[in-house]
Amino acid sequence: MEEKSPGIKSKRLASLDALRGFDMFWIMGGESLFIALGAATGWPVLVWWAEQMEHVPWHGFHFYDMIFPLFLFISGISFPYSLAKRGDNKHGIYRHVIRRGLILVLLGIVYNNAIRFDFANMRYASVLGRIGLAWMFAALIYINTGFKFRAFWTVFLLLLYWGLLAFFPAPDLGSSDPYSMEGSLTGYIDRLLCPGKLYLGILDPEGILGTVPAISTALLGMLTGSFVRSESFVKKTNQKVIFMIVAGVTLLIIGKIWDSVFPINKNLWSSSFVCWTAGISLLLFAVFYFIIDVMEYKKWAFPLVVIGMNSITIYLAQRVFYLGYTSDFLFGGFAALFNQTWQPVIIHLSYALTCWLLLYWLYKKKIFLKI
Image (tube, rainbow, N blue to C red; front, side):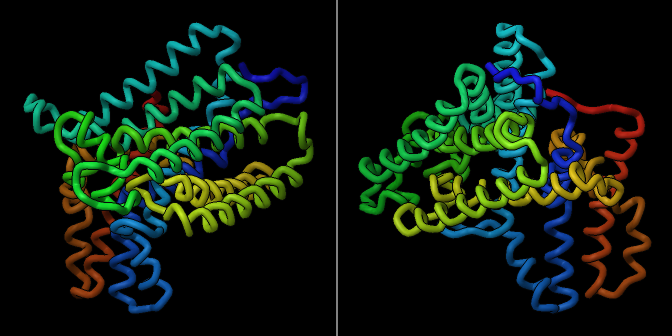
C-alpha cells in the first residue's frame, strides 16, 4: 500500500488536468488544425510541426506518437492521489482498480466496433483497452509493493520485453528481423492469441504482448506521482521540479541509447519508446507543475483544464456523435467567407472550438465522466 507520512499532500494537481487537456487537444482537432496551418502559411516551423502530426509508419518518432503514452503516464501520476483519497480499504481498492481496467477494455471494444455482433470480424485490441490493462496491472503492483520493488518491476518488464523480442523472433512469416512487423514476437502473439481482426493485418499496435512494457509507462507515472506527493525524499517544490527535469533528461538519454539496439517504435511499444516518451512526459509535467502548481499561474490553463477534466468524454463523443455536423452548422457559413487556402484552417479551428464548447457546457454543469 501507499506509504504514510505526516508530510504527504493529497490535494488535486491542477497541472495534471491542464496537461491531460493539452494531450487531448491534439486528438479533438488540434492535429488537423496545425496541418492546415502549415499548408496555408508555408512557414517552415509550422510545416515541420504539421509533419509531427502524423504517426511514424514503423521505427522512429513524431510528436503525434506521444499522445497515447502521455495519457497513460498522466493516469499513472494521478493514481497515488486517488489512492490516498480512498483510504485503507484494500478490497475496495482492488474492486475499483479491476473494475476500471475491465470497463476501459469494454469501452475500447465498443469504440472500435460500435454496437455490432459480428464477433469474428471485430477488433478487440484498443487504445482504451491498452490503457485499462496497463494501468490496472501497474496499480496492482503499486498497491502491493514499496518504492524499490515498484522501480524493480518497471525496469524488469522493459528488460523482459526486450529479451523476449530479441531472442524469440516470429517463426511463421520468414523474417529474421525480430523488430520488423513480420518478424516480431509481438505480432506473432497477436496472430496466435488475439481474436477478431488486427489493426495492421498481421499485428495490432494495442495487442497482447505490447501491454507488458506499457505497464512500465504507467508505473513511471505512478512513481512520479508518489514522488511529487511525498515530502519524505525532497521537500521543496523547486527541488522536485529540478529532480524531475534531470530524471526526464536521463530517460531521454537512455531511450536514445537503447534505440540503437532496440528501435523506438510505437507499434511495438518498444522499451526504448517507453523511456523516450516517459522522458518527454516527465519534462512536460515538470513544466506544467512548476508554472501552475508551484508558481500558481493558473488562469492561462483554464481552456486546457476544461478539456482535461472530461478527457474520456470527448474521446468517446467524437466517435459516437459526428461533431463535424454540429461544427458545420455553427461555423460553416463563417468558414465559407475565406478563400480556399484558409478555409481548412477555419474549419478545423471551428471543430476544435465546437468540442471545447461542449466540454465547457459539461464543466459548468459539473458533469464529469469518471471511470
